[in-house]
Image 1 (tube, rainbow, N blue to C red):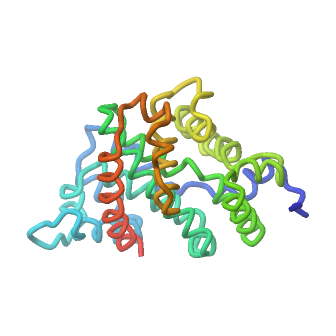
Image 2 (image 1 turned 45 degrees about the vertical axis):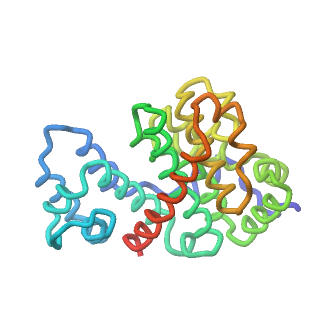
Length: 278
């Protein structure tokens, strides 16, 4: 398989990486400031009608099972809390940035499902391991394969075939390096740097397939790597024994019962998330 195009990794980041919507950065910063009121957060969300509708749908979803209908954003912000708001904003920003054409393609839907599932799994694993930063784990999980979306945006048909070959051969990164000269982890790392994301997030993306090579955020990189593997195996209907007995899993002390619980819980939450972002 040979790619007829001429793009380089720098060219891809410059031409195919969309900017994050300003509302994502602005509201995310507000959520980190304890002095900012819920009314102010609700007002900032209201300036983005699509995001506002999603927050209201989330607040009225079975996830929260509230006894009354939430009809305004201030109520919604109070009902779901800052963490859920932060997650929803990030999902909205990434999904909307890459556009309907990419996200609604069969390959795009598959990648997006995997990113959402990995984000939820990473957040749950972080809490199980009693590590601080479950919100950061969600972010890292959602962004770990951002390079795949950039490849897909550049050439949907060709990258779809690359992914199929990666599945057949059991190693997508090796196929990508053979075809393009670099893989989605390297591409995602540069994209995250271009978005000026924290160094911990950038390096997690770079090493999520090689966590032993990470030089910082070692625990978070390990958590995301495990979440990525768990979701990949469950999606494919493959056994998880190899993952269970890996040194990475052993270092955190996770077991099969915990993995089963995370996956079962995750599937239900994913259904609700898909309704929120329909």
